[in-house]
Image (cartoon, rainbow, N blue to C red; front, top):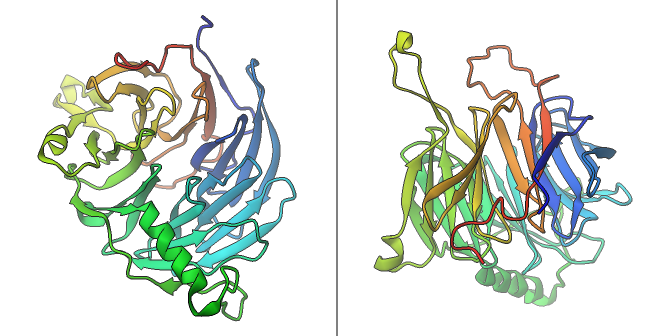
Length: 374
C-alpha cells in the first residue's frame, strides 16, 4: 500500500481563491477560481508530486464559483459580474447562460439530469438545462426567501442554505420535468431562448416549490454544504466551528439520526482567559467512494470524518493559512486543498496576494475509508 503524499502547486492564483474542483472523469484536471478575476486550469501529474498550470480564463470580475459539466472539457462559473457562464476548456470559448441581479455565489451541475443551478445573493436560483446545442436555453428562476450562501447537489436533490438559518431542498426529477414542460410549451424548442438587448437569455419565473423546507441545525450562518454520494443526506458547516449531518428521509427514525458537533477549535492561552478559539468551517467535501467527508477550517487544518460512526478519522495540520475550499477527485485518490487568508486573524487591509496556496494530497488506499466502508 503506497503511503500518502502531499505537495503544493507552484503557480497558485494571484489573489484569494474561492473554489477548487476536480473533473469528474479525469483526476488529472483541476480548476481553481479566484478573486483575481481568473479561472485556473491545472494538470495534476499522476504518480508524481507536481502539477502544471495549463491555461487561465479571464473574467470581468472576481470568480466566486466554478463546477465541471458533463466532462472535463466543460466548466461553469459565476461571480461578482452577476453572469453565469459556460466555458469550453478546450477552445476557451465562453458563453453567458444568464444574468442575476447580484453576484453569483454558487454553481452546481447535476450529471444525472443535465441541469446547472446557480445561486445568487439576489435571493434567487437560475435553473439551466444544458444540452449539446451551441445556443443557451431559457433558464427558469426560483425566488428564495433569503440570500444563498451555500449550494450542493446529490443524484436526486439540491440543497440551498440561506441566511436566517433557512435550508430548502429541491427534488431534481421534479425540476427536470418542469424544464422539459417549459421547453415544449407553446411549440417552442428548448433553444428558443428569450433574450434582452445584450443577447443574454432572460429567465422565466417558475413556481417550483421546495421538496422540503428546514431550519438549519446550526445556530450561526452556514458556510458550506455537501451532499452524500449515496443520496441519503448532507452535511452543513457554520462560522461558529460546528458541522451538522442530516438525512433526507423525512421520518422520525431518520430525523432522529441527525447530529451536530464542534470542530476546528483551538485552546486559548491561559493568559488570554483560556477557553476555545472558535474558527469558521469554510469547506466540506464527501469522499465519492467511501462516503466519509473532509472539513476545512480557518484554523488551517483539514479533518476527515466518518459520518456513520460519528468520529474523526484523521487531521492534517500545518497549513499556512485558513482552508477555504476542498475537493476530492472523482476516483477518490486525491484531495485538493485551497488555503488563503480569511479575516480570522483580524486582517484589516485584506490581500490574498502571495498568501494563496493550493495543495494536492494523494491519499493512501485506506486513508479515507471509514469503519463501516466496504
